Length: 115
Picture (cartoon, rainbow, N blue to C red):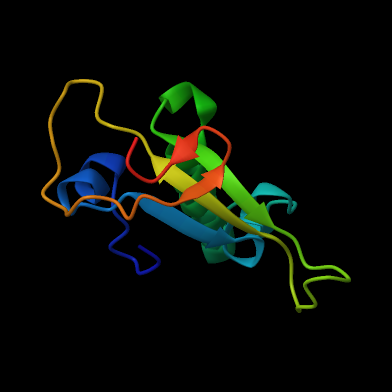
């Protein structure tokens, strides 16, 4: 997912992906940062990346729901920011992916791996 061949929600579903695990360091640097000067290569990369993450994680897309977040702190010492886990919701059109069944564990109340 993090290569330049990023995958859309439909591609991830077809691959059987059920969850996205995203450290803040991966995408928050785009969501919280000021854009680089227009007309630069950095601005182009920034614009491309922010559009990708906005479309992937947008609540309006209805494609993913955040099911867990792990923040570094006293009980979980770590460098960097939080790590978020998103469940990829079934395709509203009813198209099924090709992946295996979920593991049946629960991240947050009401958000199980299989449904």
